[in-house]
Length: 231
Image (cartoon, rainbow, N blue to C red; front, side, top):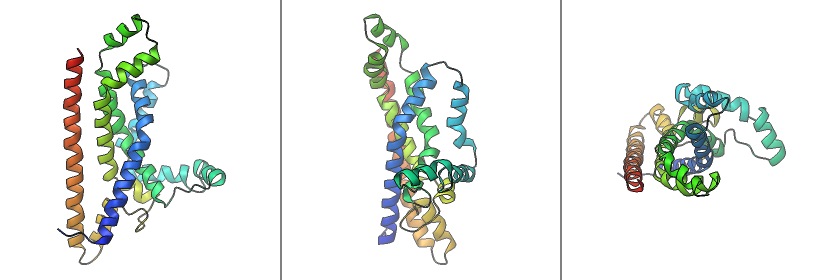
């Protein structure tokens, strides 16, 4: 299988968008996951529902909402452009935003499960010995959930790599700027004689997604073994 220069460019852009989106959502995902796993507060159910909303909403609706908020006439997008000269719509950064929003639920879910699996007795024992809540969080909960965090990041990366609906609605399908793997495959399907390129890019997508899922499963198993050793 020999890829063309344009196809390599699509793969490179897809990896860049997915990696940046995954890196950006990691900190807020962990904070949200910890809040949902460990804290009880007013609005918790609403936060839980809002985080998981992209899983059940049609992706086109998510993209449309992003247009309303982050478009040049939107309250956030207009402010970003006026204050910092940052434009997200129809840019690769907009594809990052769309991919990150769609990947957030899976990332939070994986992290939340790993945090919930950390034995509370270890945290309580540390606090009994004088550790502050923050220190117990950083020295016990965070290290014991690291593999779960990595699994969430891997799932988020795989989800970002396959993002289509919100991206094409918010960032459009611009060659060299926002045309990631799913959009390039969609474009190839519309072109006469594009079957060869579609097949090559589909194989690359399958290999990348399969690799991410295998890595995620390995990390989940490793997290379970780590918790068993800690106990």
